[in-house]
Length: 142
Image 1 (cartoon, one colour):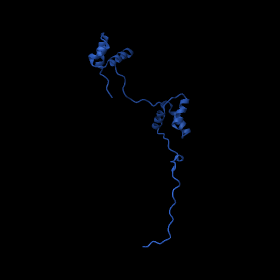
Image 2 (image 1 turned 90 degrees about the vertical axis):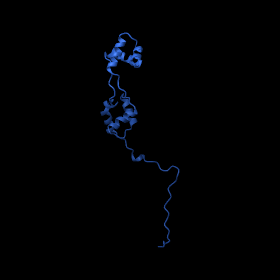
Image 3 (image 1 turned 60 degrees about the vertical axis):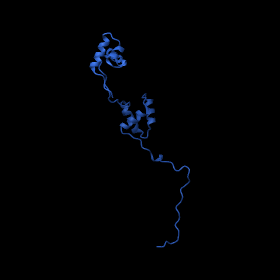
Image 4 (image 1 turned 180 degrees about the vertical axis):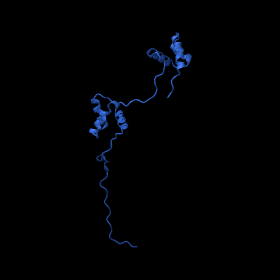
């Protein structure tokens, strides 16, 4: 990930614009993109500082605030599918995607195991397997 521009450069750019130069001329003079200068000036107007915002970090899970509800539903009904859980959350006004539900459950170490009733189907085109060949009554010589 790229690093933010230095505070020294940011302050010099803002000072040049405040002296009356156009933003595009200042961008060309300092070798930065005009959109950069425009955004820095907007930041100065909004916050009074040209300091960069925090970069990186982790976002909390979309369902972090609803952890108790989700885990209690799984305790009540352990065979609840991700889509069914997503639908129940939508009924409560919590709109999340299927991946958000899966990701939350994965983080909570909840998994869905296949049930024995959902085993592979048998052979589709072939009939029953052949029976074993009967033993012959003849003697084998040593």
